[in-house]
Length: 320
Image 1 (spheres, rainbow, N blue to C red):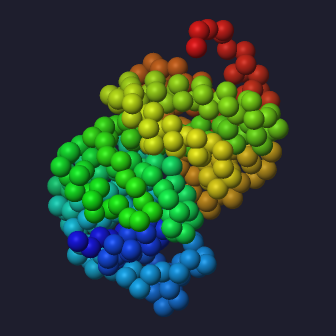
Image 2: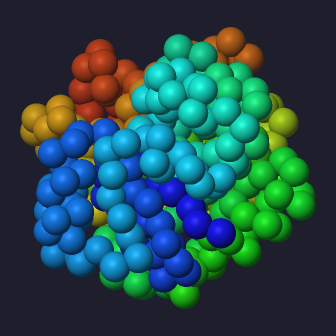
């Protein structure tokens, strides 16, 4: 069965390249010029340069062509997911839609699968998440991901369809846990980047990752997640990757904050909106999330990095 990937950024292109090893794949790009350039040059020079597109991968700017396949991977930013669904609701109705974004919608506080269910009830939703960089996937390097789907049989079918020679998928029916882990780890990556950017050291980063993971657990469990999901690829695994590599855009943003540098506003950083959404939700449901709140304050420039460190270190002593 053929699949399509909607979204021609680095991650969408990388997924399409890997999946093309299984058979024909259609990659949809919103910009006609970008689609034409990729189709003709057989490379995504703009987002994923120096990686050739396989012959089994075709690129189009016509979403009706891409939507001829039943299974569609939505590789668009979290904050643009709902608008994509609304704009193409008639075309996407009844399809199997696999969200490939990580975050919490700023206005609603919902994760990707929840947005899919609300915006397009007729669709069959799933989520692909976990520790992964586009460059690794595109180069054929081994990558393990979590496939979250409430329907167990649908999850089995998708696991068979989307597993490739370098992508190994693990199933879960805990969609809430997969959503929360993939979203909140980005917030912690910003915090860890700020720590390293400010020269506070690896020990401070390790402490922040550990206490950040505790925050992720608190929020996820309060939302109905299972604790073991957060201990897996979509939680702990992704946290480890994004908090320790400069390939992570969230970590890069944190580095710029810690160094007092201006970050390129054209770069999509999912953790920024997620931090604000999670901090607001934590207040609503009365959960203590000091790192998330501190990241929000740093993003809003209501705290300096020096003040943020002092504030966290001054918190009351307690048991772990």
